[in-house]
Image (tube, rainbow, N blue to C red; front, side, top):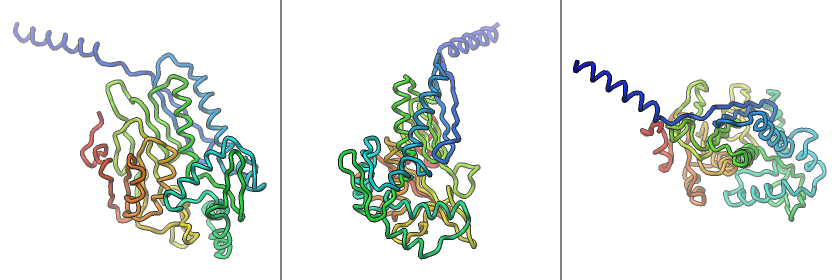
Length: 333
């Protein structure tokens, strides 16, 4: 009889615990293949939502920003680069902000070097190394002060060609955050290539999302996991877009001191912070800096953390990020 009462009590407890457990909101997935030369994957969580409306709003924004930010033949940026000047109220503030960041961080990134970046983009696609003379010539084009913004008017000097590859997907994520807020959607994850933004909760009883740090040595197996929410994580690495020619890896992150893809000790760096646009910019900039330079640079961005994976398989995590990292004992809450 005593055992029957114990079992009956356990059943009652289980029923009440199940009734009190928070209910997860419905999960919705969207995938877009046609924009920003990458796969954009979005998951959001909300009950009683007009899925068709959400998809239309989100895809319209992605398509619009792809048209104005991407460097494709016949696009708006291409028109600017060919004409050398343009009145452009939407893009002028983005250029102005990015130019200020370049100056603040030592000009490791330069959005005026589009002709040089085009050379390496073509090399990666064709598998053919560019002529040294072509690289040297392109390296001389643009440079500090060659993109001038006065109000809405943009002027390009010294053969400059704008390329926003260092910030465009981060800017996209920030704009999509605004759309989700306007739609009343608070819980979501946006992944545009190596740019991830998480907001709210993955589940009602979980505080954080779990985000894998890509393993440059084995893309099928995460190198580590970060448990976090209301942040963006952006990774730049030598394994994302590259070509191997004569046993050497030529990737898309160009060292402006040489005109050739960077050759340093890092395989990747992931930046974690509030603003996806800034994370995007910093990930490229800091990939091109030494460890000591990274720490010095981030003194101006105190709320941004980083995770470096080195060519020898070791890694380094900034102090403020460790509490969110699995390898340092963090758990999914």
